[in-house]
Image (cartoon, rainbow, N blue to C red; front, side, top):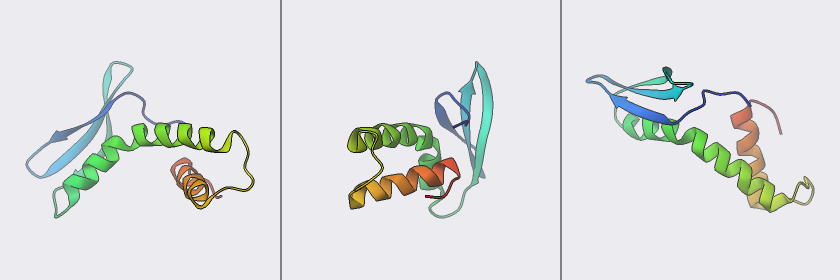
Length: 90
């Protein structure tokens, strides 16, 4: 899966939050979140997305041991979340 690598972080401005990444030594724009009610939480969730994706992918591989049959409810939820992040159907 290709996405902007590097540590994602937030820069705050008067009217918005920028989610940025140091990708190959360059600052890269990832997303802009306008300041509205609840949007700071959205900015933090977006900034954490690569870390959560990698952690979920690892946990899913441990849970399933490479098998895709007989998944528990949690396994199915994990599989759906990974598929959504990767832009594919389950």
